Image (tube, rainbow, N blue to C red; front, side, top):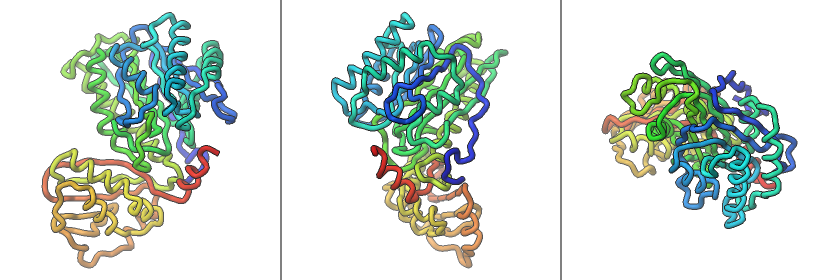
Length: 407
């Protein structure tokens, strides 16, 4: 993987779930020459589920979505790129209410059926006039490709991110497609990370929420670029019901497990694409922890390794400094036994039972670190808990991008 405009990653040929129609327009939130407002019209009675940031400084869009999720129904999604509208007081809240009112008037629906997300610079109120002009344009725009919608929600992203899958519920094939944005400020706790997944399956809101919670726990909440949790993190899942299957209401319904697996696959692909597009990143890193006291303990240890600047810069420099992994395991604060700890890079065991492997040859590790996809394995040796997280290396490119973010 190299740092260029596309990173060589192609947008998938996405299926288009029935009952979800994306459109894009240019609201001129920034001076960039591209669309920056995405509007997805949804069929009536679309079920919705969502997770949002646990940041104590959330945007008014996040607060709006939290309230709207209580109703379980959606008719539209609006995403603004270039302005996070976070930490903007009443002016920010007024902008969200104005967007919801305009869309609800257009679709003749309730305001709480309109879901809104914004991403970009924190501390600048979203201009209501630009938002409304962008909506006027998008209402009459032609239907867009999902690739166009994915590109329009990006900020520092270098390529549009999408994923698609299908599942069979009873005798009905349903489609699932998702888009995401994110490149920096990535450490979801549910980064400026947004994820939107659409399906034409019929699923009751309570089950939809349970499925999303489970998928997010294994995907979006297992990635990190820089350990920073955004004020705007939001993942929403919309089920239009237009596939015609008998609505799923419980996990033991026929086809529920197949749909849940397909949903997780879409979320995992989107989450990993966010990591691959990490600001300044040149390497994709998978960290597997096993032998922990519990699964959650393993996840915290893995994230401690993934978030370590020393580990990430060592990988960037292709330096097989496994001592930094030892450090990161120790600082996690989780149950561990130094004399049972084992570490590997790729397929090569470098430390075992608290000691360097006798006769350890660094050559295969050095060769592994020259690749684009890096694997680090940690075995704590004290239990059966295991977890996998994904991150990227830390290069000077990250500093350059963020030093100039507002200018």
